[in-house]
Length: 272
Image (cartoon, rainbow, N blue to C red; front, side, top):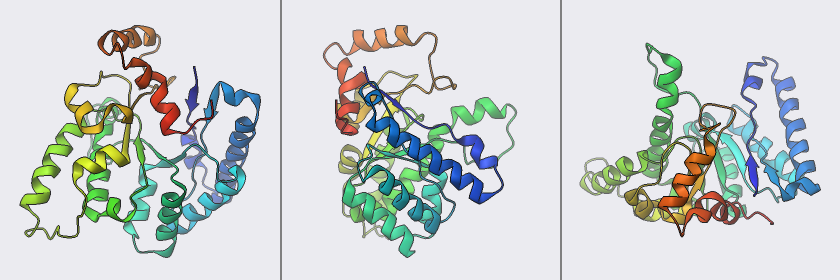
């Protein structure tokens, strides 16, 4: 088995001193590289994380991380809010340089899920926000697609973690329909690629609490789906993980190894 460990640095955003917070991220990324070079890499991989609240900070963090890892990282973790910061200044030179470099190196971007961005007061906020993680994915993917992002950066692959699979069906069929129907009405003439092509070549997803359905597999292709568990957090079936994996094995007799291991090895280009 090979486990990919993603960072849990959420509490660092509560550190008010930006220099201290940046130093914490640097220390963490140095540690990830030490682990990668050690014998421990045979069992698991720790992924570096990008720091920053502005295009300038985010691009600088990318350059620093690539120096540490010698451009050999398996993937980079970026918070969804950071992608929105870049999109808000889409023509900024730091934003362009950031995405151009990722596009050149073909390093997958793991989008870290966070609390839903819907600005409402919920009756049970904690449960509601976890239930609506997929809203973050839907909003961000639609924005990227309609901007023509995937026409401009064809080699960038986003891994949507912790948001499940079911949202893909809704987005796929809506965008397939509206991108043609609203082509003149909403000035979508700049879009070159078909939504189906984008999903198959630029989008990867992890699932934790739902079993992949036939429709989603047809849209994404089997190679783009990977099992993930956010233990010890809530996006996890622990302590009943093994029973869930048994269901996967029974339903996908010939493909369960792909979902549980092989796809991750290929998509992250792991040296195993």
